[in-house]
Amino acid sequence: MLEAIILGFIQGITEFLPVSSTAHLILLPWLFDWTGVVDTLTFDVALHAGTLAALLLCFWRDWVELIARKQRLLILVCIASVPAGIAGLLLNDVVEKDLRSPLLISVMLVAFGIVMLRADKSRRYKRVDEVTLVDAVIIGLSQAIAIVPGVSRSGITISAGLFRGLEREAAARFSFLLSTPIIGAAALLHAQKAVDSPGSYDARLFIAGFLVSFVAGFVAIKFMLRFLKRYPLTVFVSYRFALAVVIIAMTWFRGYGG
Image (cartoon, rainbow, N blue to C red; front, side):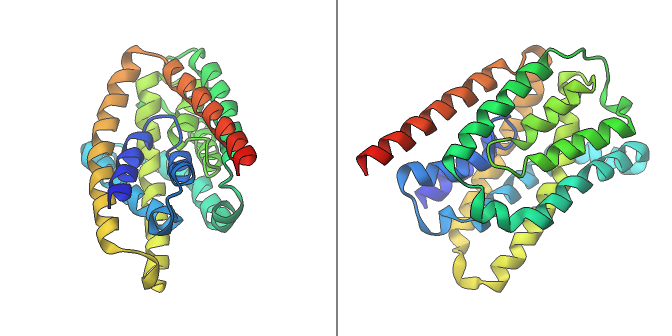
């Protein structure tokens, strides 16, 4: 239960900070030798359901406005969601089996940290309402890359938005709107797996993880939107680089100590 609560907190915070929530959910069980239910992709998705609830609570007014008055932006969000949806359907099993290596995660943390640094220097002048079809397609394609652990969905989509000229807060807001359908679809996909394999999960742990990730996610969203009004992404990039060093050091230590 303690592991589930810790992972729920980590998921809620890191889902919306550009540091890769999936990487943290893989790395913590690896670092501390946690096994069982909390070290499964299905449990990861239960935590994502908590962050989905946080998104809906934070942005329900935005969604009502999109449906009622801003159908053009709603269509762009739907279009931008397609690449990640296709990637998830086609590559989910590959990711679960072959792309959860700590060393691969460390490479992605560094590589896309550099991308974030470059994006932060782009000229920014667009608001969310000024997103174009080309912007939506490029940001959507970038979100598909985030299926690889260590990339960070929020990090890559915010960076793509910055490259396309969106202001920092606008890039974050569009990123969070875009993550809503894809997180929802992932939760539904793996909920079906849980139903098909009832022995592979513990409902109490899932509920605890869900509630903690919901509360932590709500706080993280509010923080991120305010933070990006005033500050660049540099602090998150520094964290990504430091985490990559820790992963490499732990891999080396375990290799020589095991």
